Image 1 (spheres, rainbow, N blue to C red):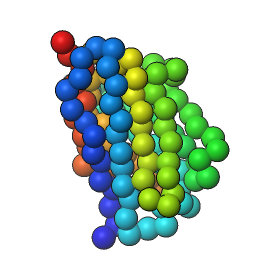
Image 2 (cartoon, rainbow, N blue to C red; image 1 turned 45 degrees about the vertical axis):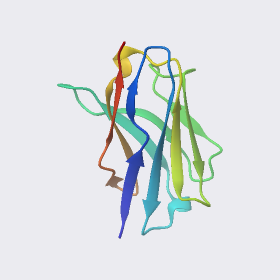
Image 3 (spheres, one colour; image 1 turned 180 degrees about the vertical axis):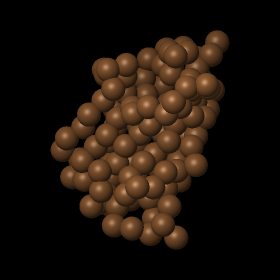
Length: 112
């Protein structure tokens, strides 16, 4: 089955960290740029970070630069998003994207 499945979301206090994972299946994962997006309540889905197929080049939204790190392990067909120094404004559903596919999303809530 061709799909993306995210995991790793949850509730964290401001200043805390989380690592999201997205596992791809049913396609040649290593051939595709992979990205993370997020959608806060009542807002549009926006780009967070992206990584090229080989993993050598990454891009980030200005709002997360220096706090989030995207990486991938093509042997495991998985892309990660390490999120540090989390803020309440980071609260959103986070989605994995690649090969014109979307995962189901994982909720990240930053609150004390």
